[in-house]
Amino acid sequence: MAKGSRFPSERSSYLDRATGARVHQLTSHPSISHPTYFLQSSFTPDGGALIFTSYRTGSAQLFEAGYPDGEIRQLTDGPAIHPFSPAIHPGGERIFFVRGGGIWSIDRRSLEERCVVRFEGAQLGECSLGAGGEWLTAAAKQGAQCGLAVGRASGADWRLIPFPRTVIHPQFHPLDPEWIEFSGDPAPRMHRVRRDGSGLECLHQHDNDEFVVHETFLGTTGDLVFTVWPKRLCRMDWTTRRIRAIAEFNAWHITPDRAGTRVLCDTNHPDLGIFLIDAATGDRRQVCLPESSNQGSQWKTSRYALAADFAAAQSAAKTGALSWMEVATDSVYGPQWTHPHPAFSPDERRITFASDRTGHTQVYVAELE
Image (cartoon, rainbow, N blue to C red; front, side, top):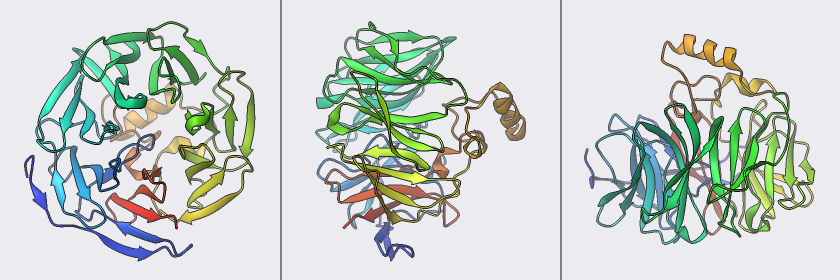
């Protein structure tokens, strides 16, 4: 297997046993394959292909599958990519991803790769593009310094904005790309900073026992939506910071639609399935049952992991220090590939999710209509 290799379609379909929704399984190779992270759509903007990470070559590499029934094409080879890092440019022709201490882009047609920026000796998290695709950010750790890497997708104007704790999931404000919201780990969780590094502030002060997770922007409303695990789904006004509950429900990974009227989520402890939640009323309807194993000991609790929790996981895994980068061995919050991570397609008529229901994590698409 090498860059540019093509393989027959692996697609099969079934009707969900709980809702009757039509579900398409797009991969079937006996290895881990999963969509991009839930904060990104795995579909190209035209809906004609789906981008996913697969370990079928022995390491995490980038692939695409024509949708609905196209062949599979390998996009990268060589050193492994960060499996949850890919982000598709709004134009659809380029994909950004992390490899080692650098952010790379690949042209989907020519498969030519370009290193956008490299931070020597650093670890980087998943990529996030600003509206229009001009700006790019990723969580970073370089030596003892944590923070956010931010710069232009062209490779210019890059900087590391320092932060005293681990940074997770930085995201540009959908209406004002001067602002970036990001997570500090552990509590307090929600912060924002301007793209130039100014205006750093905590949006919500809370302690370890208020398990705030998976915050993101509520579409083009510009407000934030987040989970207080496993109790409720909440909304925060970006300007006033007023918080109100949308639903008393164990919403887990959450993805709003573009208008901010619906929130897609999976569930855990108990796993009730994937749901669509009305952002105004809290009413919800079940989409399907992903039947994933949903691993991670911390999700059985209602607090963040402490040093002792990570030490126990490290001992059990017999591996080095655990972090948000090492998703393969983290029994505290993962492995992440055992979580559904649902996300919308560009036309919002279908969703992607991952499931290891067959013994290996595979890529799935469920129809919403």
